[in-house]
Image 1 (spheres, rainbow, N blue to C red):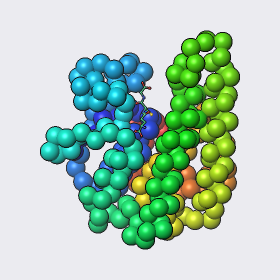
Image 2 (image 1 turned 180 degrees about the horizontal axis):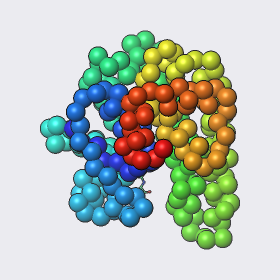
Image 3 (image 1 turned 135 degrees about the vertical axis):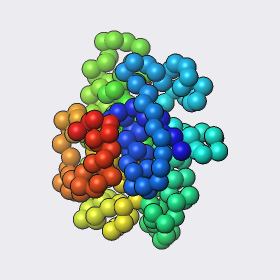
Length: 205
Ligand SMILES: N[C@@H](CCC(=O)N[C@@H](CS)C(=O)NCC(=O)O)C(=O)O
């Protein structure tokens, strides 16, 4: 397996899952800052021009955080990254979708790539501030859902925690204060050896 990632990008969540699995994998940095996501050879690997990408051992390529994380969890059942209980499974999928489709793609994406949300330079600040608001509101909502639970699916770390991790990580970088339950969740994740290895490897401490 080979992970294409950019340091500190959403691919960090998949990186964490690979470290949690403990199985061997290769990795390759794609620098978003240098625009390598749009250039060959990566443009052929993923014409969407995005990370994360997971190249599987049969050479096939999987994109999109929900699909990659689900595949990793289901193809490594012993690691218990996806709960057995149907209700918890649904909660995990619900959280991943909300993190990716709302908090990331509607919130943080407005802050990172305001030009994708309107052609006018003059609107950039308003776009970014709306993104901040969406991210904050989304995190506040997930804080309520998480409540006093250790992890999204209860006492077991799952792929949903890896998704939540990357937006919590971004919140820290952009000085968005995490609400109390998410702050506890994030601190708990930062204690996991797999997370610490990834932070060191991506050099984003
Ligand atoms: N929906 C995609 C989102 C992937 C995505 O937006 N990745 C960002 C990094 S966090 C990216 O590669 N952006 C490339 C760019 O901005 O040009 C997923 O779930 O994997």
